[in-house]
Length: 271
DNA sequence: ACTGGCTCCTGAGGGC
DNA sequence: TGCCCTCAGGAGCCAG
Image 1 (cartoon, rainbow, N blue to C red):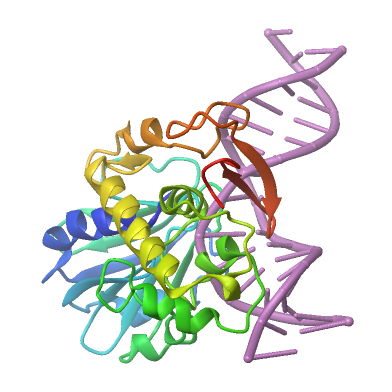
Image 2: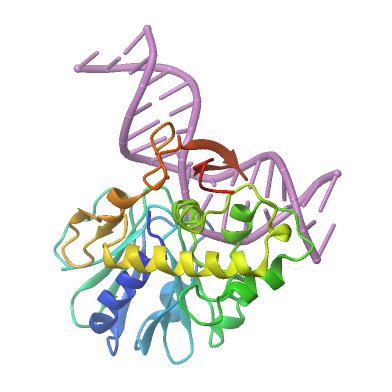
């Protein structure tokens, strides 16, 4: 599943291959993604030159002079650069043919992803307008979390996964960050002190930075399509480890569903 | 304004 | 070996 570190890796990998390229044609083989792929996609992009490849949260923004292509990979989406003679495979849904000859190919078995048009002011788009800060910027800190959580009762883990508060903290990273910070996931977010939120914000940054350094949980090579395992999975302290000992204190890791998501924590060192 | 629950979809994994 | 069932997950959306 592409988490924020993976999406950023995809962006960095694709950008040098895409910028200044012209879209020669767009072929939509399966428009039924999370939202229908716009019927006018091909017409809107044909002949347009890619100016930049940006990222906001887990959305990729491919910008043209008068249009922006918004791509979300959902849980199972991937983008690859392929040569024109490479046969399409099952779940290859959209081809962006570049004038240089190669094809940017969108693949998504579960179709939780999205391909949309967002015009010339993409950051004003409904999907991007209300997003919280990027987790690795200074705007994301303990003061922010503390201020945003006052008067609210949701469990801190659910709060942390709310994109309106901070983007890019997925289910795995939320459990891991709370473990690093020593905070129990079920604690109502409005009852957590400023000091503990300082610790939590630092923990989120640490976990995400660590994940980037380890290559994410799984990374797919965007050029040759080889899936290679990231090493972050080997470093998970609590996620998926119900019944096993906590690597920090030896306590028995517990699991339960919180906000429809599996949640893991150590009852001994997370309070 | 919050909150909890639902939904989309397919592949993986377990049980038998 | 194969079939069936359950579950997982990102995140927008809606009802209460």
